[in-house]
Image 1 (cartoon, rainbow, N blue to C red):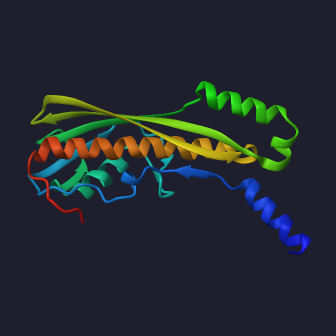
Image 2 (cartoon, rainbow, N blue to C red; image 1 turned 90 degrees about the horizontal axis):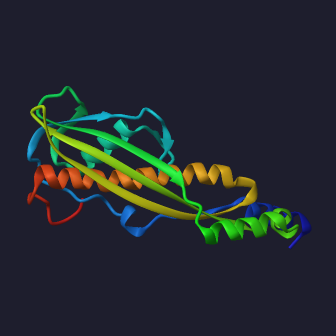
Length: 194
C-alpha cells in the first residue's frame, strides 16, 4: 500500500467513531389500529437536537412523527386542548461514569492517545415525560429513559457527545410514543409490524 493511502486510512480511522444503537430501535415501531380520530401534541421544550437518522427535531415534531408511526390516531397534530392530547418534554445528558472517566483521563494524558486518535468512550442518557389529557382532564403521566454508548476519537468527541445526547433523547421519545399509543389504543395492537 502506498504511503499516501496508508495516511488516508489512518486519518479516517482517527476521525471515525462508533455509536451502537440497540437493535429494537432499528426495527419498525409497534403499530396499533386507530382508536381515536385525533391526538394533539404540545412540546414543552423547543430545543432542537440531532436524531438518530440525522434530522434535527424538537420534542413536539419528534413526538408527532413517532405517534404517527404507531397509527393509533387517524390524525396527529398540534394540541388545541380538545380530545386526547399529550404534553411532552425530553432531556438528554452526557453520562460520565467512573470507568469511562478513567479511560478518558488516561488517554488524554498519554502522548499516544491524542497523537494516534485512540477511541474515547462515551455515553448519553435520555429521559422523556408525557402528560396525557382527555377532554381537558389530566389522565396520567408517563416516563421513559434510555442510554446509548459510543466510542470516538478525542478530536471529534464533542460532536459525538451531541449526537449521542440526541440519539438518547430520540430513543426515550420513541419508547414514550409507544407507551402513549398503548394507553390510548389499549388492546388494539396489530399483530405484525409494518
